[in-house]
Amino acid sequence: MKSRNVASSSDRAGRLSSNGAGGSAAERIRRAIALVNSVADEAGDEELTPTEIAEAIRDCLELSDIDEIPNVRRYLGEALDAVSDGMPADFVAMTLYAALGALREGS
Amino acid sequence: MGRGRTLDEAVDAALIELQESRRNVDVKIVSETADETVVEVTIIDQNAPVTAATAPVNGKAETARVLVEGLLKHMGVRAQVSVRAGAEPLTLDISGRDLGGLIGWRGETLRALQSVTNVMVGKHLDEGERVIVDVERYRQRREHTVREIAMRAARQVKMTGDAITLDAMQPFERRAIHLALEGDPDVTSSSIGEEPERRVVVGPRRAAEQ
Image 1 (cartoon, rainbow over the protein chains, first blue to last red):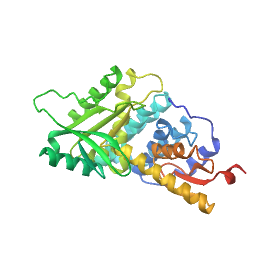
Image 2: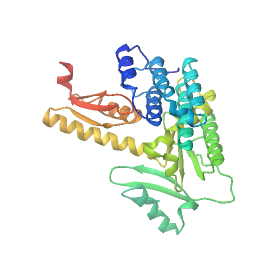
Image 3: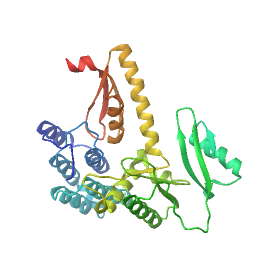
Image 4: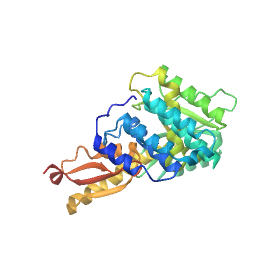
């Protein structure tokens, strides 16, 4: 992932996984988007790694509700692949917005 | 030219003078302060091809502008896209009537549009270069508002010595606050919490440095 303020922060990753257990699908996707946007917009006040973003997307994929709506799981899977492949933050964000849009259309 | 306390008032003043409706004109903001906004309003020639560039034509900027214009056309949105003069990074302004839907809840749709735009024009940009998309100056207004909030918070922190936690904000808004306060010798800003509830804390610099 293209980012300029990325550094290791294992304590935050731990908090992220423990906090990520709750919330609706839309909330979890919005949270993942916010993390990606934080990298893209260079807020400059947090250190995020691709692992943390992948973790947030996996939190979305854990929800069984998303299978009831077409394409949501597919877009989330594509976003996760994009993070793994080191695609630019805007590309990941766009794919996550597509998942959010599909969720809205289907609900 | 139109003048008013707000953008809407300035545009309305110009429209009354020209006896035109908003859909037939192109609006360019000449200056914008806390007290007064000055706009230049020109009547659009309906038969002329749309070339709304307000900045000297730059290859990358023009490519981005044309791509976004095409995207909006496919979306069925009637709007004009122009390149903001002198803006760094490259900023595209979208203007038109009833564009609230293009901004969306807390600017979510606008942010999505910006992501799509950057993916579309990415291959024309240098490494790390980005395009900012703004609709009806929403983003600029938000940045202006959060900077004012930051200044107010800084004044209060200097008076009381207590730290203040602001509302949850988007990354570009937090960035605007950090930039606004970075030169202040008496206060400092930092962020706490998890996205999307991440908040800026403004506190006394001495306390932060101890």
